[in-house]
Image 1 (spheres, rainbow over the protein chains, first blue to last red):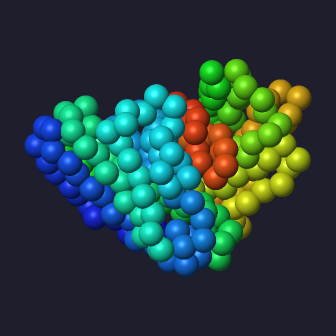
Image 2 (tube, rainbow over the protein chains, first blue to last red; image 1 turned 120 degrees about the horizontal axis):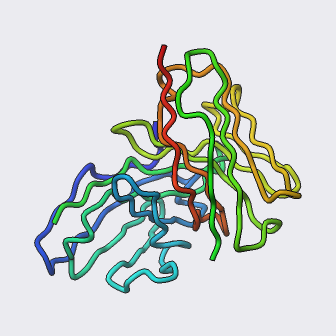
Image 3 (cartoon, chains in turn orange, blue; image 1 turned 60 degrees about the horizontal axis):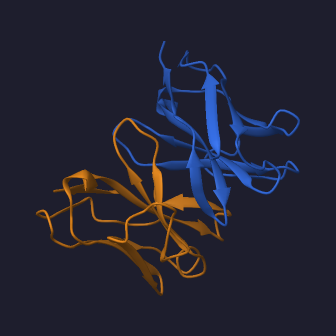
Length: 109
Length: 116
């Protein structure tokens, strides 16, 4: 079971802004950096955001991340059809001594 | 460009041992952690564990009793063994590189099905 909670779905029309939340605890998000991944069916996940708000190489600046306390969020501005995918937050958990993923959010455009 | 190529048996019977190997090319092998992640059908991503070049490992508490991750630095390879598999272990398994707690490169994925 995931220890990071995300909404199961989010949607928007082309050009809109969508925000995905990720709620954790003091042992994971509260004390470690958050990463965000995009996962298209049938392909390997891709790193979008690392260290809370740093875009991975080649990621459009439409994607941005932020963190506050024990929560984090991913924003997609100027939504495009190609952004339809599952999105996962993740962080190291000091109590579990392991990496934990969020429950995942399916974004539809 | 770092590339990870993985292989292993795709169909297992209950109680057998899952075995996957991942070879890394195009980048340094000795300054990262190397990880295994899986995704059961219709479910989210699950971290299995990781290893570094020294052989230091971290495992998911829920799988720790059945998992062994090993490394062969001479071949730039690392491997996953999961013992006593059941249908609940059916998943797409990915190998990946961990850099500064972020998984930045992934293998292509291997579907492993456990069925009698």
